[in-house]
Length: 583
Image (spheres, rainbow, N blue to C red):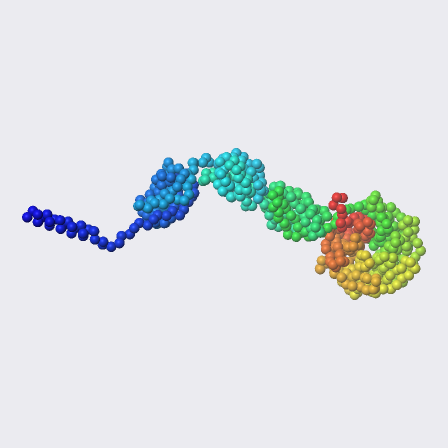
């Protein structure tokens, strides 16, 4: 019986053992943990580190993380990313992650750094700069590379261009403003004791006027700092220094430099920042008052230059007619009376010069008009025998010379007819030849002069008292007149003006612009025959006037006399369209 029980138990045990060893199906094997990387690569204790990889536990406690053997607490966990803080006591070494029986170790070390002292600034090499300028910052704890240090001026980040642990070189941004300098390294900041003054890059937004003469004051509007330079760049390639009369944060007060032509104001600072204005139109030329005419007030004179002397005479004042002639010496600024005009008392006569011999004639004495022409020898101070002008007697005609020929045309005759005939005088054989009539209508109170081998006549008024601004060019080689660009501004007509030529350019100015109101003028215009254009130049600085007179000596015109708003005048002014800026 006992034996039977033992056998039964053995069979039961075998049965149970066989049942327990039965395969009920497959079980999941844990997948291997992988570390792909971590960030940052270094940090102090407490720095948060993100570890990326595969097959991490999705529960924080399912992951065991160590830094060179020191366990770190997991803050966040997912299958592909863990976040931990660098634990106390850790040292530089590998990061290891273990999940169950599977472990992975990082390919590179995590560098555990010690806590760095905050940066300090001991000084700046300058106390003020312009926007975009360079500053050298001295101090300590500026990090191990330029990437470690960020620099700000009043909160505006600057560019670090050179780095050392105790020195930084920065470039201020264009938008920087005055403020403290901050150096920031690893989240810690150091500040300068004093503010760095930043002058903004100059910006021009406008001009108070957009045209003017040399010496005109112009207010340049915009944004301006200190240490600025102002120049005027004109269309002729000149870069002229501009005189500064004062500066404010939003305004600069300057003067148009002498010698300038139309161009732009340019403002620059020491850092190379520049700004340019809109175009400014320059009415060029310099006027200088000289000695009053020696013969006193008058109008309707003759005027000419021989050599380096000017001659003015005849004319009328308060009903009195004159025959006196006066010589002007620009070197001494003195007038000297010379021999009276050979034709006697005269006003509204005409003149021209050929080979240093002056010729003058026509004109009137009261109601009598003349045809006589007299020659003047300035060396002998003598008027020589008359020749007779073959055209009708006239007054207020136009005269000029081209080479060895003299020309007279237009004017008003004894019967009040306005004339447009034109005559050439040959001094070699004392003969006159009629040429093609001038322009479209008869005229008087016109101006005339020669530029090179061409003659020019324009302005005045016609038989219907229409004031004119047309301008005509005469070519003696083919005896033709060609209409050119009207004188001056499109709406400006004038009579009783003066005209002259200097260095290949023609000039017309003063006069009146209205036969009824007789508005007196003082503007002047320069004509360039190469492109048939007029530009305004410096206005006559004396009293506005009509029926003035002019002569030219050595590239300078001398304008004076005439009638102003209160009668005849005696002042004279020198005009230099292109003076040497050094003089």
